[in-house]
Amino acid sequence: APAARRRSTTRSRAAAVARTGDLAVLLKAGLPIDRALALAIGNVEDKAMAAQFGAMLAEVREGAALSQAMARRPALFPPAAAALAEAGEASGALADAMTRLADMLERAAELRRTVSSAMIYPVSLALIAIGVILLMLLFVVPQFESLFGQAQDRLPAASLAVMAASRFLREWGLGLLAGLIMAGLAAKGMLARPAARGALDRLVLALPRIGALVRNLEAARFARTLGALVQGNVPLPAALAMARRTVANSAIGDAIGRVADGLREGGGLAAPLAEARVLPPIALGFLRTGEESSQLGPMLLRLAEVLDRDVRIGLERLIATLTPLITILLG
Image (cartoon, rainbow, N blue to C red):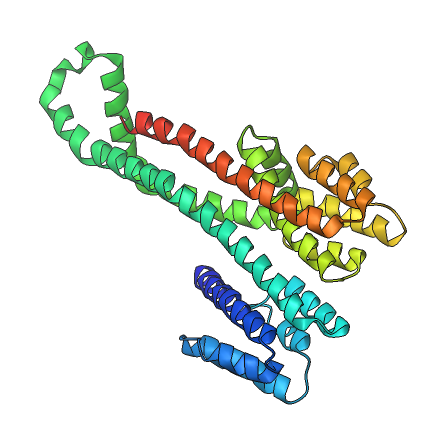
């Protein structure tokens, strides 16, 4: 059920990205909001999605603001989307706000696709390796073991180790599988606790290569959302609180939350984030330059592009390292 919900949310967000782009183009062409929304909905093929967008159109025709209709549908739109739409409505530049929103959502979706596509090959290779090893230990090795008979004491240590692993897996395999399932459920319950989740996220950030990749990935999401909100005239404290929700790593999210609290009390942005040491150094340089030049929004969006490039390069290097390791294990 959780996997089905995740797939449904993914499809919903993908539909929202496409329809937001359509809506931005139609509003730029001068169409009224209800007409533009009706035309955008006409491109929705999935009936369930069309029903959700249809209800949204009905609310707008009844007098609700577009931002309110978006805020009532978190499965379709992230909180930053409603905030951008609200700022555009307040400034009378809804078309520009929707264009900015469409660009933000599309780039975020492209980054997710990049990460997902890059991991397909190593994950598939790992699954094949596990399957082949299980096949060898459960079915092939027992046949050779019976052939050797009493000559096992003259076999090399490596052969004896393989046969011992085969016997262990055949005798205790079901118990081992049950133990792994129970351990997985226990770990899932433990990670539901904030303290345990925070410890794991801090450990991930400390890992070589993977830590830098996760840090750049989270910083790219954060910078893109915050930059779009700032350029959409959303107040910085509110924009920072919303951008924090896009950060999955709790260690980075907690640090940003503390900075957001300090910002409401009149503090800055770059200096507290530098003290927290959760963002990559390049991000801090962009933030300082943006604050000093009063160009925080454009600098954040530029930072997101740079970090996207670094994430792609980091993924390529990680896969280049993982692939031969998995191949050696398979051999």
